[in-house]
Image (cartoon, rainbow over the protein chains, first blue to last red):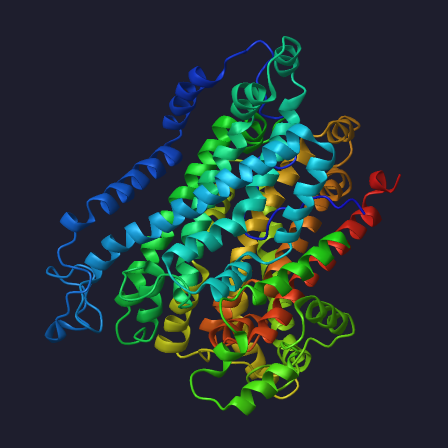
Length: 318
Length: 301
């Protein structure tokens, strides 16, 4: 029995099993800044990832300017106009209360993205810190921290989130917290694996030998060089966080009405599915498109940042 | 074992972190003092916390997970009632997933950048990104609503009505199987690619072995290893993580039970269900590890 960490059920772990795949050559002492530009350049040359990025920027802009973009308020009720099929005045139709679906989809973007970013933010900060400490210090620090992570990992993601929401009560804030907690172990594992590959690099040892403090080593050398898989994981986790928020809201445990959350709109539209398909269709498309773009961006970033995977994806590695 | 102990502490702590009194919450607003005291005493909540934990843990080890606040049934019997439906769906889904993933992943690895490969990449990307409950709703609309070929949900045991069983199983199994299949397809593709690039494959080709023989004995055997892991993980996920799909299809499985217990604040049932899922996850991981040693002689050292 090896007790090896397994990838989570629904989240492909970035950089799995290739802890040393991302380390730059020993000659690059300060590789961070120039590589950023190179990364963006490479990403721009990948049409899929570039398109995904543009769409995501569009969705983010849409959620920033939602008030101006939405033709109607999210909760403007017009009973005379209820359950209208898509038309010029209501491109996505109206729901059972006569609310404009397009407006609600636009305003729902903010809800989904806020919860997604907050959740991944929580997981990223805490998970990376834990992984960094476990990977860098090793020994008992590693044992204790990673065993705790294993315990959280043993719970199915959605169910752990449901249980946390059962304890803390429903709502968007708690949803972000629940999803965040669920994803902490993933970031801890990805970071740890990446740090293990970097820890013994020549530049780290050189820096240590001239008397650099642990803090300086960690922030100047280890973290920047261990970052690529973490960045990839961030993008992929955003996809799953948006999906999880939708699922939890669909179940009635996440964002609460009358907020225009996509998952909630799907749940409301489900009852009218054979009467008015557009109620569930458009919010579903919005979730799908957002999640797809975060996933595609994650894949693009992996191709660019992770040379080993890149050759593999490019077809054969032979 | 350490992980298992920690898991049980977390599960136990979850319920006791609930702000307020779980019994009071479960009973709602109208109840008599006698009902309250009786339920409190029956669930052992009047005892000190540490003692509660150990009596719960002791019970859990012997298969006694306490009594439901709602129905008064034992949690074990409630879970046992739901188990067949969940197992059926999980195994049907994993079959669908493997039926999609193995051919699609293998072909796209053998012909990188071909039409099939591109198709597989797009499809698996879609399958990973699409909300499964949304697909479920759309399928119900099409196959149960418009076409009227299949019932929109529910479950009947195989022994009572084999045709009805199959009809009700198809849609949920396809939905969850496609999502899992998308994940597995990517693993199959990359592990076959990796195996194809290995030195021993080149050696075998150089020896002049027929392509088919090289493929089955040198490529496939090595590509199988990651497949075992990812299939195990997906199975664990299917046994517990398909709450939303179960809800949409009114599938009376464990996910539905867990959600209902959250909605009715039936904490002993929630505790029992979550503990069971965590144990299932750990057991499947253990089995995967054992399988590994069985199929990969390199680990047996």
